[in-house]
Length: 293
Image (cartoon, rainbow, N blue to C red; front, side, top):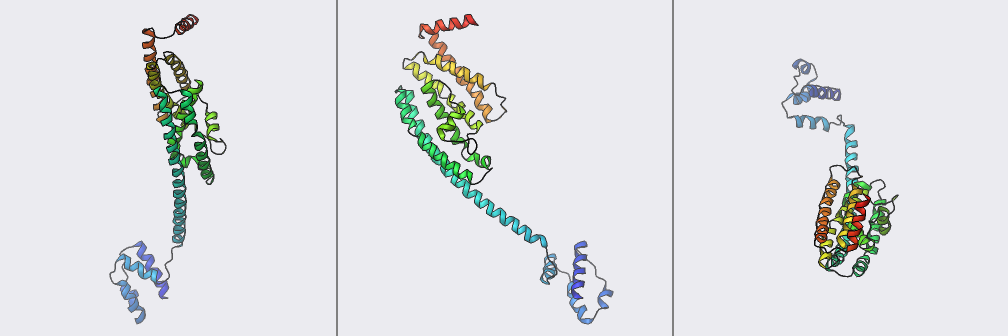
């Protein structure tokens, strides 16, 4: 009887935070019942009233267990994700260290050092990069379908790697390294852990930033044909990029910067040509190209 009345009181409390209990209802009960309920009618705080009902065992919230279980699952999930991210960042830090060594080796090409010697020294680190990306791939395989969730933890390092590999490839062949060729050099597979297209394109834009400096240093060293070669390469590369419908994002900004690289190389080329330092064969070839156009 008391339990039923207690539940009735709690229902009234939820509907009316300041309930009024008729004295007639209390007076008609037995004296022991009146004495027990009179304590409930005394002014109390909301927290005291609720704790009294909950202590009686009649107030149960079935959703509290589900809520606690949900946040417990969240806690385990966040801990696992944090541990995984720390492992990824540790590998990314090692990749960054290797790219610094490669870049330091490639800087010697601006000092008119033999290209073959410079490239050979830089290539010695590609095997280390391949091993690091293999470790990174193994970590990502532990969480299938989560590639782009953790992609931001290694994308900047990968863009730098692409720029260095592209610069080395251009020094060797005078052509652009392909997306598939970069994946092959790093031991990546598109089905498991591939090279993101944006990372490849941004890396190529980074590579173009090195070419104006390279041209100036080569002309200073007496290679007056270098501006023509670089100008042709950058013109073709810029035209290829214009085929893409780039949005207003970081890649678009880097592509816009390529125009300034192209302009700097053009200025060097025109300056060499005006001073008559370019080879005669170059002028003949230009006249033939103008006649065909």
